[in-house]
Structure formats: C-alpha cells, structure tokens
Length: 455
Image: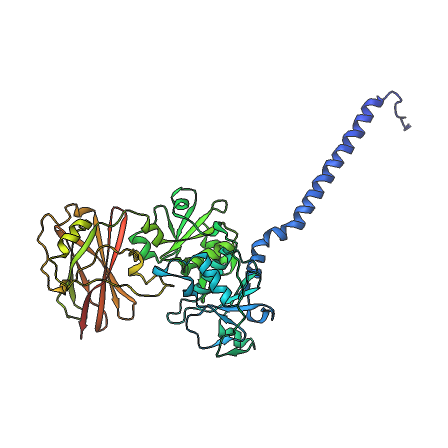
C-alpha cells in the first residue's frame, strides 16, 4: 500500500526565508541585466550611425539643396554657375607664396561677397584649369570650419549634376549686399610645427607615393589623397574604413600635402569618419628646417637633342652655398647673365610634383643654368666636400607638366652627379627639375634643363 508522507513540520523557517531572498535577488539581477541589454540594443543603431549621420549632414546632393541655403562657388574662372550662387575664388584666400591670408583679410573677403557667419552655405565648384576634382571646395569647407562657420555643407556633385537634377544655371554669379563676417577661430583644425614635432599625433603624407619616397616628415605614413576618392567624390564610409585601417581613432591625425589644399580631401574623409584630424603643409615643415646649404651651378644633358628610344646622360654640379658676406663681395664682379628662377603654378597642386620639395618663399641664393656662359668652378674649396650626404633625383616633365620619368643621379666626382635617362617618349621638348636632399633637408631646382627628343 502506498502512503503519502506529510511534509515535516520541523523545517527551519530561517533557511526558507534565506532561500526566498536569494531567489528574489537573482530575479532582480537578471532584470537589471535584461534592461541594460535592451537599452544597448536600442542605442546600437544610434552609436553605429553617428558617422553615417555626419556624412549625410555634410554632403548634400543637388536635389536636396534648400532654397534658403547660399551656394558658394569657389571656382577660379567659371563660365557657368548654379543659379543664385555667389562666387569667391578660393585662390583669393591665399596670399604670397600660397600661404593662408590673415583671418581678418579672409573675413573681409567673405563679408564683401555678402556672406555672414550665420548664413547656411553649400560649397561648390572646382579648379577648372587643371581639374583637381573636389579639393578646392573641400579646402574651402575646411577653411570656413576653421573660421568657426557652423551651418555649412559640401555639394556632392558638379554643376552638370546640378543641371541634370533639373536645377537652373546662369552665366553670371549672384551679387549680395556687403555684410560683416565675424570669425570664431577653431585652432584645433590647423596643426602647428610644434604640434607636429611633439610626437603625440599620427602624421599622414597625402602627396603621391613617389613624392613621399623622396622626402617626408619623419614617422609619416603615406595615404595619397587619391585613395579617398572614387570618380572625383569622397568614397563611401565602409571603403574609408579600409583606407584608414592603420590609424588609431583615439589619437589625433595630422594630414599634409605641399600647401595643404589636396590634404584637405584626406582631412575631410577623416573628419567624416570620426577622427580628430588637423591640416598641415609640407612647406611649413621645410620652413622650420635648417636651410639647404647647396646651390646648383650647372646642369647639362648629352646628347641633346636625343633621338626617341635612345639614352642621354644628365649631369649636374653643386657647390656649398656662400654666406651673405661672400655673396655681396662676389656680386660686384659677377656678370648680369645669371639666370634666376621664378616659380609659377597651381595652388591646388602645390605647384606640381617637382616643386613639392622647393622652399618657394626663400629669397636667398639663385640657380645658374649651364647655358649661362659662365664656366663651372673646378673641384676646389667652393665644392662641398661632404658630397656623400647629398642625394639627387632628376624629374623629367613634358611641356604640359605631366611627369615622363625620374632617375637617380649618382656621384661621379666631387660635387658632380650623373644619371642616364632612356628617352622612351614621344618626340618633343622635355624639362628637367632636380630634387636634392641632404641631412633630411630638401630643395627642388625647377626646370633647370630642357632636353629635345627627336624622331
């Protein structure tokens, strides 16, 4: 026979009470964890979408430009404008040597164009003579952000995209009443030399890799500005993550090119991706280095002319640069046929590849071309004895400015460097610039030689 046992009446009430408390405590903990997980689940899209939202807020398509926004076209010489656009040539923001003008000068320029710090702006336009894609517009965006402008976007497209979207165009830019522009500088967007050398920032060289190989800021990594573009537009966010995979997000990033215009593209992509990014220039770095202590005294190519497909030998000679006192002494007896270099070019490109290593603001010294009629000095006291520290590269450019070739020049005798260029190019005239580096300092001697290539 089966009998049912009754629960004992001898159970300890304290034990039962502790069991109940433990169960309640466990349920509370599970409840708190569940709430936290649910909150994280809800906030995840917001956290993940912060950078995506920044893309959407900064880049605007032509169809989404509201009528109350002012389109600021920064093109230097446009013949067609988006209807209602105000034109301010971005080159007007730059002064002598393509250095940024003072804040007061830039503010005056914007005010005279009818732009105030409270206007909602859309930056558009490009450097039409050489193309260069969106870099002038992006540079102007950076500049206005540096001035403290808050309501500002960049047009994601060209004037052709604007017209294709059904928006009107005009052959004249709009005129607005003059006003006052009151800047509020954000110094954290512009790197100084001291900030760069203190070692706390990641340095990105956004020039072409070939320029980086010749000379760069110590410790810099190369991310050419083209790497952040696709079809002359900023790459999508997921692609930029791959480009910046080696950079740490918890450390500031300094980006530079020759004068900083093209570096603004990489700065912009970093900014949109959530990095603390600052703009800098290779020129400022060179300005803060010891002066290059050599001068080019002769450049020659033999044979010249050279037949297409054959080789010519390029020879250059250097000597130690004289002191000011010696220059003044020798100038009294020197002839007037010395050729002095003047450098012109595009501010966007930083004057092109060869000039990216020149200190274009220096007023001391000159370059004598071999054809000046002066005999070159013998290898004596004036020739730098420590030639072994000097490295030379010859860069050959077509007349349209495109690079045809570059070749290293090796030391042959004291102060003299020789290299061979195989002229596997179409017939025509080609100009040679010499990039020289010594003790980490560099200078470019521009268009010192012209070589004729014949059939």
